[in-house]
Image (cartoon, rainbow, N blue to C red; front, top):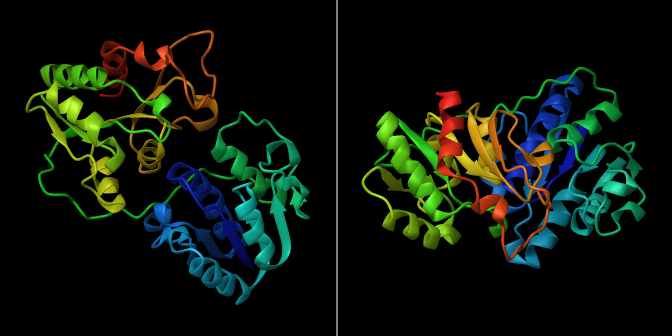
Length: 319
């Protein structure tokens, strides 16, 4: 059986899709092709349960569209799963030569993609964790008793300057409203070093340089700055070797969970029931407005009111 997975984008979404892919490979002995964009490509390019990766390089438009169309037209699939729920993924799903095209139910579709002529999985709880929402496709196909596994290969690309024992503070988040404060991260790093004599590694993307500078200005030698200095594979190594990972709701949080690490996740606007860490601890202030799922907020008190003592207490539960 040949199956095409259409899941293009964000790192966390791709990671949360992997248990479904593993179940398809394991139970159906399927050959899995995955259509993806550059951001998450390194994560699945050598994944043992993915047979072929089709890269849609959105930065090389319109050549990328022609190349992707040729790839999709070169093979006949038994089924195509559109897990992205947007017009772009729906378009590519329609381009693929496939006996069956399966997508989410109408209520969970975006950008009116429910109008496309796909089979639809039954309606279900839209607030359930996304791992389990994706696994509904396996249930629809008839795969029972699914274990949640990620099976990520462990990279040996260890960055220079990494201490033997450390805690990771992942400071970034795609939505600025989901971020904690520089003062919070700095105070937490001080407290960790005083109590456990462990260095803290701060990680994040190039867009987090300003926040990293602010944290470093408030910190001493107990904090090492790796923000914007690692590839995805190097970040994987850093997370895998950490004692604990502290993170807001962002892709590296899900990556740490997939690597089997205990995570202390800081939540406010987003709902940990839907996008939270499946392993570790959650810090969520009991406010009437949280979670709100807003992308912007003039006063994100749900995040700014989190104290380093609360986060340290969750770390102590793990260590």
